[in-house]
Length: 617
Image 1: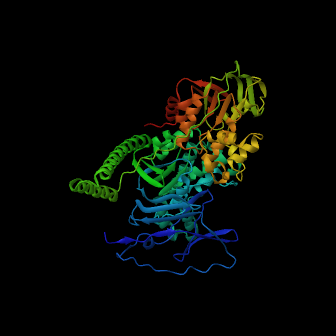
Image 2 (image 1 turned 90 degrees about the vertical axis):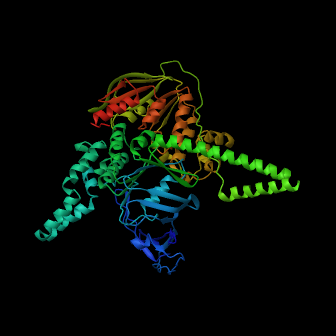
Image 3 (image 1 turned 180 degrees about the horizontal axis):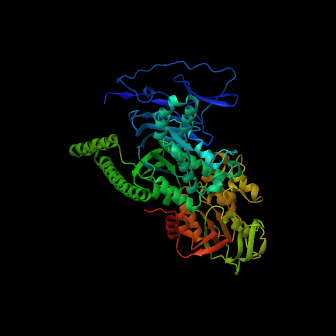
């Protein structure tokens, strides 16, 4: 093909003017704004015209240099933290996106190097990779159009919870429907002369059902009618994140980007979201640590490894099988080539200076070897680094270790969460607590630790019982200016540095990651610091409240293996069906002021939730 394509380098200069931020492209003399919806997603409008995205030129590349526009007086200039180069090879009017020569740098560190990205309309992609490899950074680059995305394709990247305001949850979702609101405003202003045209366009975007659709989405995510009318400022951050997710689904963008969308959901909402997203018929890219969720939603998997993106067809289980087969074949080819190379080199070394006949044969083999090397040799398979978690065994305690006796609790006497609870937890207990958000799962854990006191009844704990609790807000207590090593030395003074290094290393954090400021660590790496902090206390019992948030799949598997090898008691709250299936021996359902045992495993409970929601395969 004689045509070549312009290389679009998207390095931004950020101009701060009184709190407003403009991103400019000085290399092209263009300016663009990356607008952030208050929802808070990243809704990116078209940044430039078609001709600047896909531009075939004669074989000899024409370059036109333009002087950057003058900077405003007093403007503060900082370089963008991300630098991205890419070539769009699909047609700018196509609904499919094919990008080649993609490189992505973050703070000078290469995350992707000369790789390809393919996003086809109607496909749902799961983005996989180890913690810290740059999955979220890639999603941000797509969401903020730092990649050459055709301008006719709108993008919504869910990044933050909805803004706290006096607006109701339902209004917050509907208010993002800017096109519908603008059309209704036109009808009011221009009257009958434009009514026919306005109604025609409203019908095209299904505006008459907007409120109904928004209410259905909110209901699926756990909002009853009363909650839908509640002001957003009266919700916690987790619930406002659900509203933001509802807004993203309601907008139905051409490209939807979701980073761990199940993190703030209970199991019932996870089931609903899975069923909803598997019907999404545009382009979806989702990062998730839940294998079960990826199996239900994804049609393709993008694996991010060694600064490359590799595309697989099928869901997560199919990806695992296909990848294993490809890597096995690759290793066979690699070993064969290495054996051939070793054999030829040995022959050349032995007979290269022998008789004329042997020397000619040696020269022939030398040419064959050079030809193989020029043609490109098969690379050795690089396996994902396997993390090994380890909790210290601390021996046994005679039962009863933790006992609830006629426990009644509510934050106010007239609004009880639990009534007359009677049960016990021992060191051989492996319990998963399930139930809708607000049923009191986290409250039950706080009653176990003594952070909350019953209104009536008694919680009895063994005198020597040590309990450690992991919850979603521990990461907020980390001093991000400190390193993981400094934090552990501060929390547990008097210990040698090497012992602290070893303690952190048990949870897959080693080398430079131990001594760099924790603000430079990924969320998953910070979670490992918290696990190291908890494990140092050598607990008899672990209470884990959503421990998988921000962990990658490999790390979750390591956590499950460590928990199964550990001899202490476990009470787990999680939206990850697979983790529960791996470690829990009992399922306790928290609802209607009671805790009852589910007769069956967690996958049977999932089917119960599906039937309860009226969802069929």
